[in-house]
Length: 321
View (cartoon, rainbow, N blue to C red):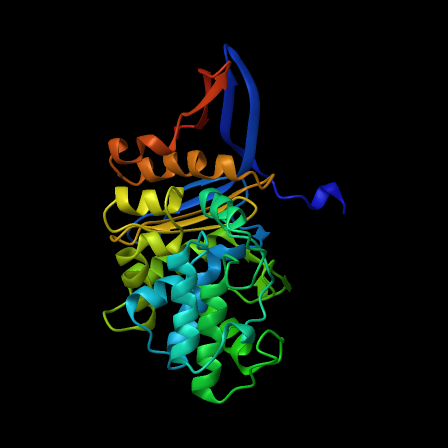
């Protein structure tokens, strides 16, 4: 790849050790105000990136539009990158069972639970990687349920020309306001689309401002009502949604974070090196710029850097202004 085609990323977060800057994480970011106008940008928010799992709420909107009427907890799990706890796996299995399906119908990749404690407990119990334990099993279970409802083929629900992926692409195009010009395959096996951070921020703004009863409103309401299902115990996305009233948040692999406040403000960011550790510190300055109370997000920034078991520095987002 020609380096001249690389996105023009900017510094988003910095790690110090003692008096030295040890590491700098670059990336791109955009923040929209309540009226949808850009109030903050860094790097190249118009450049195309893969949203990865951060786009799951838009997939869930497509499922609701396809007629899938899930209760709020199941709809939250359909939008989730869950930790793989027993509760998460049981709920994914329930989505399948209520559609008349078994876990064997899943076509997502196999994996161990994503959450560290959940993974440790799973391995200690002698379990191996499975499709139900993989963090996208809720999404795939809901996709299969939508196929059953519409009498669409089950075996081929991941294929590009299948009616469900076709509907998902239409919904993503509508909510982001962008054509899909590049498509690849995500880790779990579903399609992933190249989109701009600006388009993604607009889509999350639409989720939180949509009228009551709409598919967009239902997905956002379900996620905000069940943050423990969107991620899991000890996960920063779950903690952030609990800490900031009305916040909708979803992370994605390779340093993606999307967020929207109930007033219609929204943030989308990409850490260029894909480092998950920089995702939340990079997001905090944008939330502060949008008026979020500093005390509610303090724990997600200035993360301690240890030396000999003691704090000797911090990983922090670069302040605005």
